[in-house]
Amino acid sequence: MPTLKQIRRRLISVKNTQKITRAMKLVAAAKLRRAQDNMLRAKPYSNRIRQVIWDLSEHTDRDLHPLLQEREEKKALLVVITSDRGMCGAFNSNINRRAERYMRNHEGGQEELELALLGRKGRDYFRRRNSPIFKEYMEVLSNPTFERVSEIGAEITARFIDGGHDAVYIVYNEFKSAISQNVVVERLLPIVPERDEVAHESSARLEGIEFGYEPSRDAILSSILPMYVNVRLFFAVLESLAAEMGARMTAMESATKNAGELLARLTLQYNKARQASITTEMLEIVSGAEALK
Amino acid sequence: MKLDVVTQEGARVKGLEVDEITLPGIVGEMGILPGHKAMIMGLGIGPMTVHGPAGDERFALSGGFVEVLGDEINILSETCERSTEVDIERARHSLDVATAALEASHPGEGEAYVVKMASVRKARTRLDVAKAPSTVSSH
Image (tube, rainbow over all chains, first blue to last red):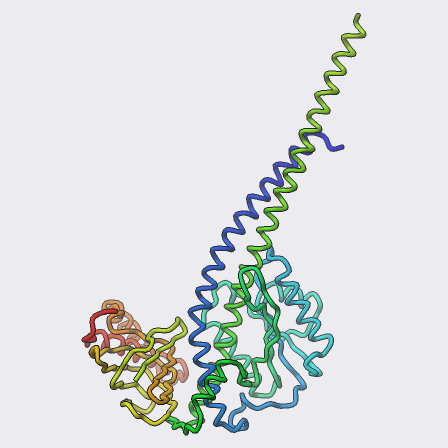
């Protein structure tokens, strides 16, 4: 049985923890809203560029541009997007485990895989395991600008073109809603236009249309394709950030609730102990008085 | 024709009704009238002039693409600023800064010199666009 003093100390510490988790929850909620706004703002651009790519690739021989060419995948790059901070539930471990499983089981059939890491948590995890790391990109998530992500995209693209990697995949948390995230593995390079509703709508309106290109199709392709890679990467970063805030909000919400339950239990224990000690004291006094008679 | 302009910061122009539009192409200015051939064109840095039933409007564009398809004109640009949104004082200031940076550097720098030249062009475009304002009152 812990003493009264011990219980009181515990109570105070749990109360303080609860204050912190509650504050973190509120901060995460505010940041989540901002991250969602960012995503919403970037969405039309990303959709638009996908549609243009689709329009172009419909009429394009895949051999025309190196970023469209599929090669035998011997060596691939895995871009893993985690977060810089913890306290967000299983957010990071889901991503890290997924990437590790992908590597261990050779899910893509590649002989060799390297990692490009965005986020401190992924870096720490894979460094500890001595996994082959191609590059670490820190200080991106704290200030995610399109310029910075484009630099990363350019580096990855250059490496793909010179044959260092035969394919590039992104592993990140897709933002489903404020309370749910979903780990996805998506191919970034070579570019294969996705056959989804955007593409469908696009090919319907393209029936029998011959496009003109200014200055030339090659020039258009070689500037739009790298841009597309950057846009996709940027969007993945934005989604991951929104998902992180959602995960943190949920984690802190339940931490606050758990702290509340613990507080209730401790308070009960404290009161019982207090009463027990009062009863003991009374007994001592009474029996002491009895003995004097 | 319907004009859409989308940048990384979101949609800037949405379904604007236009009769004629002049764009800064990579090789030079390019006008688009109704019935234009389907086309994808790379864009440079410069002013975009839109002539529509509501009047003329000017924008500062930099980079990106335009897709013309039927009566739809879709522009994807790095930046797009409506003339009324440009702060003339700031535009003038950034032109001075960019010009000074360009004068201090040397064509031998290669890439860096090109970037500086582009930023001067961007700044000048913004200023020019702001000085010759749109005839449409603000939205």
